Image 1 (cartoon, rainbow, N blue to C red):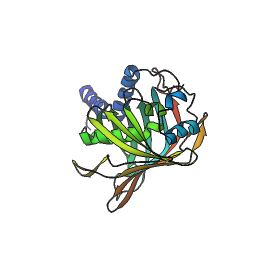
Image 2 (image 1 turned 120 degrees about the vertical axis):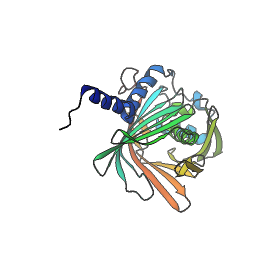
Image 3 (image 1 turned 45 degrees about the vertical axis):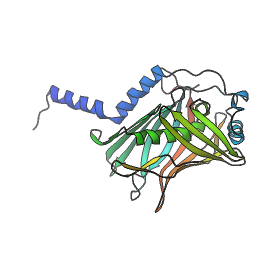
Image 4 (image 1 turned 180 degrees about the horizontal axis):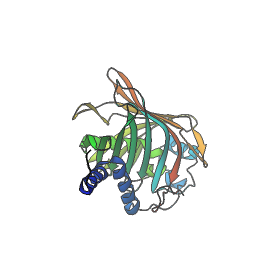
Length: 283
């Protein structure tokens, strides 16, 4: 029988600690909580007057007028599912996510099971113009480790799409808005050399129901990308602690041979102004 020495066990522990997306995610959350610039003040009628009319209506409908600005927001996901390829089945997914207002950043951790047993973990980081995706199988084998410009562009598009889930982000200088019509507005996110744009759609109630962009690169094959139309649909609005938020989110690539919906998740709430000493804190 093989005997593990202390040195061997320490090496295994060190390897796991360094490569586990969950551990990396937890360390990065702690780093952001310590270093993220605080955001003060309230979201007021006066602070949104420059926004396109349908965006202003969304702020009023959703109940964010009079709420404090949020520097760090946790989006609370439940019942999330993902397809890892067009020929793949849906897989149940654990998802944790934090968005950071001042720097225009987001961190997400995802955990699925391959064959119902083997953990497949991913950490997706977008940080003020830089992106990095890390994925491992069985917590040690790297499946992908990508910090390309394409990953950064993809992260920027997602942050822009999510800017109305935490409207403090939509009010930052790195996002500019333009009017289109009474139910549609355009926005562009500028950070460093990166610039991505998207279209926001709203219904008559003021609900944000769809986001579209052609600026997110799709990986056609390993290391080869092509910008493909991308959309997010939001529905099933519900009220949580005085705020009306979408309860269901679907993400879809519009490929040449048909639509590929790869994400289906339910949002149960927002934890706003997360404490710098406890990630579970709320305002």
